[in-house]
Image 1 (tube, rainbow, N blue to C red):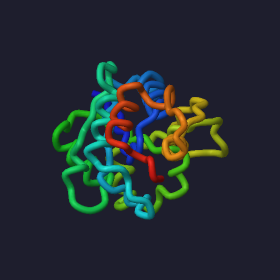
Image 2: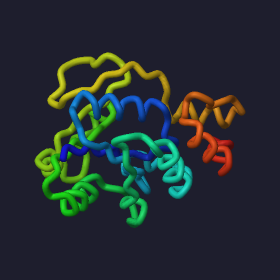
Image 3: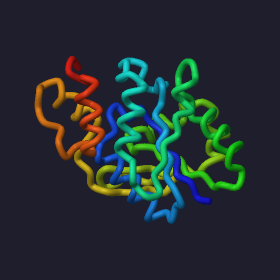
Image 4: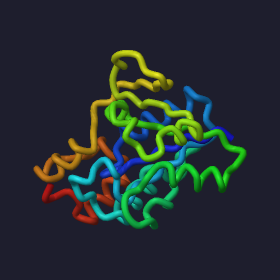
Length: 186
């Protein structure tokens, strides 16, 4: 089975995540994409995310009923930062016959060399860069490019300003956001 792994804080998950995941699923001929919300992203320690349970609920609401999309919550049960290497090892142990593709945003590419056990990760997965606009410069990994002009930062700012986030998040994920009062003080 060809499995895409899409980790991240998903703070919040938005339509851009879903569009790029669907594009990667189709372009790479994947059997499934697993969304993996991080408890604590090691590269975003400067900002405390929304509660893990609320982010997980938003991710589940966002992918519910989407063929080929699944959710894995293994990182939320671990103490400390969520390291990709730990998750990949766990999922490989559970699914030893799978071939894994790990999605990273083009904004994370420059810091990839700092990831814990990056050489081992490169051996265990095929990295795939998800780019929200035309790719710039050469890259050692395959890219999935789709123009998407939305970000989690933008969503959080709009909520804090009292602006609508309709059409930026799947409807049910937006309901979870409002019900939990997330990002109002960002």
